[in-house]
Image 1 (cartoon, rainbow, N blue to C red):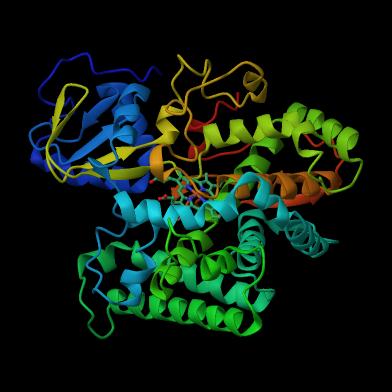
Image 2: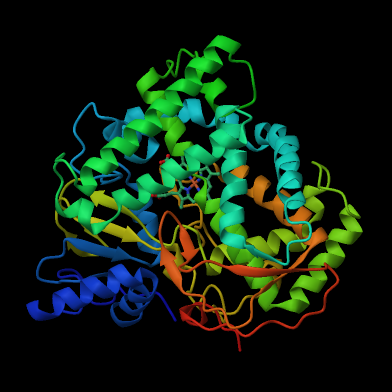
Length: 470
Ligand code: HEM
């Protein structure tokens, strides 16, 4: 599929021009499976389009040239997470959403100046040992287990890693508590029932969301107080925030630290990337065999250290290809701060401007046979940042990118040297957009010996429309 478009000249954005009666159907299909709905939109209406050309309040930008425009004008295309919610100012709900993903301009730069240094490539290597230790602990739990729910196990492991590296806390119980609170909070917050009645009334989902936010904030503040009592020295992100003193970037207030700690804690994207990568490897036994050979040759059973990382070339290509086909953040958005023009089309003030790495990564002009899982393409593929953007682009690109790549590489290389994971035969795999792109009903995997030559199990479900598994 070519993602081009823009050929219709200035004026009205292209789009389906639906009769009002078709709107509920369109909205339902978008809510059910945004990746499929957006792929159809791009195919039919091109690289910049809308649902409703008469009233283009929702604009979809897929083409790299137009994405360049969006990301290069952050003063015009602004972020505003939690915008759909009426979060009472000063509430915990409001504070949890007030981190980098809601900030723009000078305030955004000030927070990034504090958040970025501890997440630079060289600095995140300091977390290698913690990631190795926690992965080792997780894999020990798999001994003698014939089956694992891979998505759940990856999410649990990644949360433990986040608790240790974001908060500097070593406590599986606390990791588990925070994980449960955050996942209940996000599920509640994104439920249509919460959005429909945004009043703090007894028994409403909105009130439950508010209370969960309060519990999360209280837990973060408890950890902050504990860290201050014990001394704040450490490689974790919280220490960096608590000790940040710089004439260019004044320290964050406690309220701001709560917001940023919460934002950085949500690592579900890494769990999603791990789950999908292991699924793709199971479906492509030849790639898996080549990868095992690379791991045996470079690591010989050990976890990777700093010098090994650049030698794991196939592993890096597998990961890039997995993030291309099944990006953990398949859809994100900006808002037009004022009326403007994009690609010759008029965008009204306040319009929601969506971008979708999932759709943009399927541009056959950049990625031939785009639906095929082919790590070999990365020997020559050199896409621009607007053609391949699993970590976003522009000033809001993922600040945790180096950390994510490190943790995923370590977990994958340790896991693949010990086990072959193979989907339970007959399992249906459908996509769902939750905190990240996840298998809707989970990913049950058989735990086999690493040398098992089990063939790729047949898989049913809408995942077959994401990847060419023929
Ligand atoms: C494979 C794993 C990950 C993927 C695919 C991913 C993807 C992304 C994307 C696409 C964005 C930009 C969203 C937008 O444009 O609206 C983003 C932003 C962000 N990510 Fe990640 N992320 C990952 C892991 C992480 C980790 C581990 C952390 C924390 C250490 C993190 C922290 C953040 C933060 C704080 C932002 C907001 C940056 C800003 O607005 O300035 N991410 N991420």
